[in-house]
Amino acid sequence: MTSIDDYRQTRESLHAVAEQLLAGPEYARSKTIRLIPVPGGFATVQEPRLAVRADVLLLDDLPIGKLDGATIAELATAAGVEPGMPEGVYASRTTFDPNAPLFVDARQSRILTSAYGLGDAALRALAPDRTPVLWPEHFDLGIDIDEVNYGVSPGDALIGEPYAYVGPWRPRTGDFWNQSFGAARTIAELGDLDALTEFFREGRRRAAE
Figure (spheres, rainbow, N blue to C red):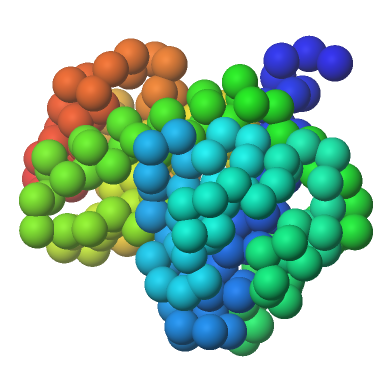
């Protein structure tokens, strides 16, 4: 298996965990699906206090199980929650079987979650009055300002690695806008926090033209 395959499978497993093990139980108990990036992973913002750190699931900051090789159903039992989707909130969803083993490579997970960490810092620099949200539906971290979405995706069918995006609600034209939804640059291409922040700032300037 290549590192690309490792990353894709890790991303798909973590997306399923985010939806079925974090956001689903959170919505059932606290009526929100919002998740946030935390050092080395991501977490719920309300009860139950569940988090992923690399390849480990935590409850109230205490590790309760390794993700790799476990099933969502098994981990839910260990956490004392009922696994499932946040029903009635959005239509698109992962189709990961909660009884199938997860594949979570710790190194690939750190690549994914470090992109969220960079994105969180850059989005807060762009708009200090906004709180970035990790949305379980598309598994991306984002904010919107003046009808423009700014965020970081861990990758998808279009771009298979972590990338930053600027997505105006109304299409724009020009060299900056290199995707049908707006503009995207991979995190590897941007390289660091300063470049990522400047990409968002340039997107904001261009969107205002």
